[in-house]
Image 1 (tube, one colour):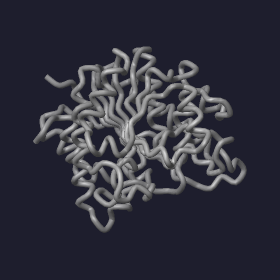
Image 2 (cartoon, helix red, strand yellow):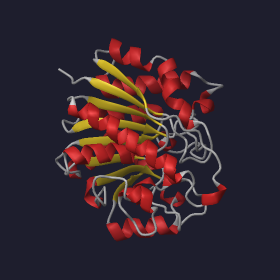
Image 3 (cartoon, helix red, strand yellow):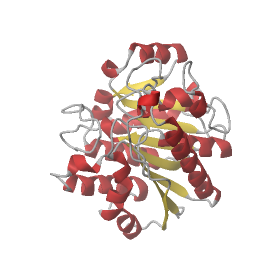
Image 4 (cartoon, rainbow, N blue to C red):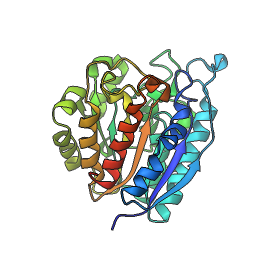
Length: 301
């Protein structure tokens, strides 16, 4: 029998490039996510949302914008995920941006220091306020989890341990290494991070996930999906629209997530960077994405 599934919203775009992602939890609920998971056989408890945060420009902190809000959101995710794990549940976290994965891993590693993170994203998310001028924390998340040099002290120190993550606990899939900054490429090499490309994930989603799971630690497993890993033409969902005609289709990601969530170690799936406005002209894409989550968390319908 499957465990109870707790759904948590993290409606924040504070660490993003612009508003939009804060609407994702509400949109997925409005399109029937909770009901479809329940009809598919999961015992679902909707635990509600953390703080609603809408991106605003932060000219006083141009290279690390809205830092205090991001820390607040990450801590809220950690507290809610921790409470769900303590009641023996699996967890679905609806971001928001990719900083939600930090809150997830703070909760998971507090309960199992040997936990692993399968991170599906077109970016490495290893930038720091010193390596990029963008100031958006949503592509700096893993840098703070790994406590890389020149990260923001308030975020890197916001967890129960420091560093929150060790390289051997992490495997990245879906990466387009051509988008990586020179700093990110240097850190990947220095830390010996394991990763697979967006082309490899598109060609063999189950094989890529299987390979990653084989080398991740034996502890609890969290899976994070940044929807910008998807081919934007096939599934226009991501805040970042650059992934046109490259990367896995939504069908391929469905197979990847289903394989990951079927692993005996699995406990948390988090979603990041979904901007519902991208699907305004093609709303069936949101229905398709909910079908992906349903299949991953309940099995084929």
